[in-house]
Image (cartoon, rainbow, N blue to C red):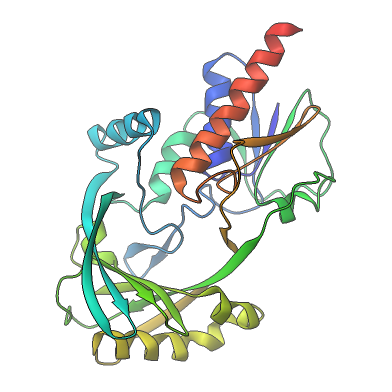
Length: 295
């Protein structure tokens, strides 16, 4: 079995297959595993530049989070977020949002332990295997095979802003509504637990779309928007990361797409979040396991 893509969906799929005794090879074009469960090292620490946090309402995924908590890899972060709507501030309470002291990519690295993972290898044609799993956005999967899956994705630019000191009031994270630039801002030092003076801001899709060709050029606009939002002094540094396929529109009821022995999975198959990607990858693995028992 070959799994193309070492994000949370691909790794969850491969992990389930291997645990069932079915050999699986994971191929990833990037230098590291994790996909949008991404943490990048700036200066002497990692900042989460992809998924902002993890939530769970499926018992199986809650169990996975509890296992990571016991291992010291994940911890409950907050149930509350600030909400800014055209300058009006309020606080909203939601599900427990989990984060990772070592960066969210550390959770993907844990799933990848002892798996057969090949990094920095781009798959451009459908490999020959008993089954192939394309664990990626459908527009990317279409470059490899005609999968016939319609998905709509929105891009995002992520800005990591480092300040000399923490000069903002505690707010954990903030949803920003009706803003031309910002969608969310998270206190990375708060969610990671080290108190670092680092904020991570995610742009709106409309702001990101015309700037994908030169994301670094948007650093000034992103910094200005965050500073005005939170009344902050200039940042010491601003780094920008581009996500061309960042946020899918919610999918239907199916957890994956199957076309013979070709599968497509990921967080577009349901409510877009880390849990969905994990469930999608495992659902593919269970289908493959079931098919292998029929042969």
